[in-house]
Length: 504
Ligand code: FAD
Image 1 (tube, protein in one colour):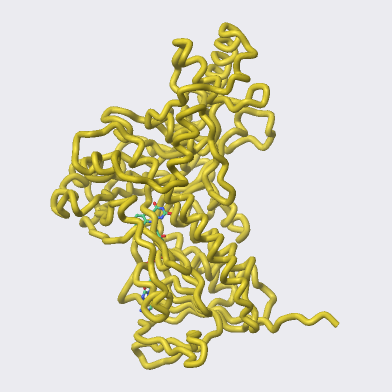
Image 2: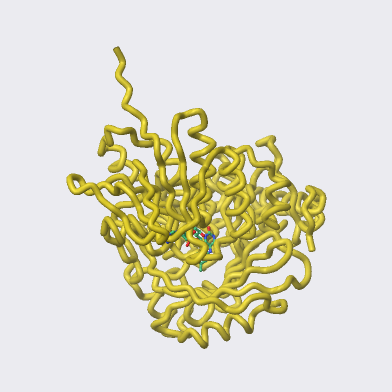
């Protein structure tokens, strides 16, 4: 007779920010029909972090799995479409490139396109790599359309994400989760009780005196890591020496001009600023390193670059870049900021929440608490965090800027061996090492390498099959096709209107 492990019946999610409500929504949908009670406790007094508005394309698959209607979601979260991120002043002051959600050119005879680009560069024929990317041209033109589903079409070579109001997204998912049976409790947790034999968390106590018992606890309590750290003392890997920014100041402002379909990141003297356009306002922030700049100067830098009238007072946030040593410890799984933090340069945090939820479902525990589930979960999440970490470090390290102490530090700092190897291989002959399990694909690495002036010394010799004239002709057609395809797309703002949302 096949024996099945007894399922756990009570899950408590601690925290009602983006992580908490994404977890609640996903578990309520994916565990539907199972005898399990999901409860979420959140504290209105503590509140949420209130930032986290730019995403990567994977969020669409999350929403789709939940059966969320895109037009309804966009209307309620005041979302805009996002084709990539523009990076200004990173490689050198005055530089600008876009990291697109899409590819550059096309493979020719099985050789990746960027090798042909390097070959032409060496032959003295230089067109920016951006001119071979449809989403970059569309973004710069302020245009948007859905990607084509036919993989033969140029218009299928890109993807898109959203920029949305984080508070509205959490509220949207709360309504979704509550409709599927999730119980919400408002209250502040002041204590947690552990089983003296194995250290598992048994219950949490609210300031009202109420005790909430559960079998599995999902810690979505934000930076404080209420259970994973304060109770279980799991420990934290601090990556500040590689990603030295440790503060951010955020403020919202009104929209000026057309709503563009991309996020902008501009390098500053001791960090960088973001601009995230939503339908009804713009989210702005300045991520900086407190060893090089004061809060006052950082705030002034942010306010000086606001394009519209300020809508909120600047809010300062402190953080330590890194990750929890174990994101799953005993019967506590940390998701969101309680699991770790990688600064928002590539909008990866919400994606890491999504990944964590997927992995939790893959290794969902039963009452026998097989330790292998936690071990594998932690291994996979560690890999994901390290991949994102390396990609972020690349932005800081691959710079020619020497105009401030901060950039001198970043340019000269030691980087993880995994990144040194990747950089070396690209510099030498344009090889993009394929990380398994990492979220960023080759085109993303190529965008940042070339955008920040890391140009290969050599190219793949298989590119020499075509003579220069033939290749120049082929590339000219590719460029023309990209421009023509972009110009057939509607203006981003009009597109938002057509799907039923209200731009402005
Ligand atoms: P929080 O929003 O902090 O929520 C914590 C919850 O726990 C709250 O409900 C709180 O009330 C509750 N809680 C805490 N303690 C208790 C207690 N004792 N009792 C009861 N309840 C409690 N991510 C992106 O993907 N894109 C971005 O563009 C982006 N930008 C960012 C910019 C900055 C400056 C920062 C700091 C982060 C950014 N992030 C971004 C990350 C993103 O904000 C978070 O990943 C996301 O908001 C999830 O946060 P959270 O739910 O883990 O934590």
